[in-house]
Length: 312
Image 1 (cartoon, rainbow, N blue to C red):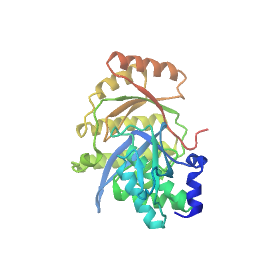
Image 2 (cartoon, rainbow, N blue to C red; image 1 turned 90 degrees about the vertical axis):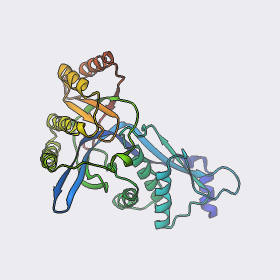
Image 3 (tube, rainbow, N blue to C red; image 1 turned 180 degrees about the vertical axis):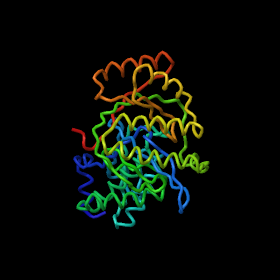
Image 4 (cartoon, helix red, strand yellow; image 1 turned 30 degrees about the horizontal axis):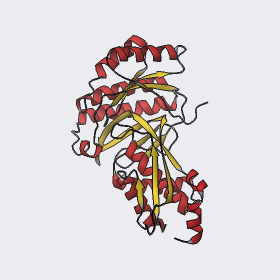
């Protein structure tokens, strides 16, 4: 490692340089269309403020350590992403450790793995070529990420639609929906890779999903949170034969009782939730009472805030 770079990583202030990516609460809509190229899978992200992943670099502990390491050690996809991108851009990572600090639960449907991969890829570029324009950095990060897994597009600070199997951006939205999501976790976990090995695609559903895609795109462009939440509910119901949520019936009952706008689920995870909006004048009461109702049904809940670009 060059002396200047070594000195930088011995600087106690260096650990304040980080790359941060947000997590999500499932998806607003996830499905597929069918055309000349066959079935094409898509999703609309549901990014949330409360879940984030940050990646930093530091000198590895112990004399003579040359291998790139990562902490926690089980973030093997993120490590592979950093190694691959380092090779492409000519960044020497000998003697360095990647530290991931994340509060995103794993295998629940919060996009934890995608956030890990993108955070370390952006960190690699920030360290090796700090003047890289953001669009170029995003493209390079995604070029590595799509080789490792299917995932959400997490590089827009708001809702985005993307091709799910390549994380390719379709559209990004500037909204002011002010959604709150009262989320429950049904327990257990879903291994996304295994889940996506067999996807029973249906041409009838593909036509429905194509219509819902167009309707949600229009709703988000019009900043129509009610319509968007209704589509999220339809997506939850359509997907329930693929990955049943035992809480869906209870959530629908509480939705009706306390006037939630809709239901949002992780289409390859264990979480589901009720959508409210701070545009509702009695938002706080509805949220509090819905959480009380869910608690009476045996569910613990957490409160999430939709992350939005364009929010006033």
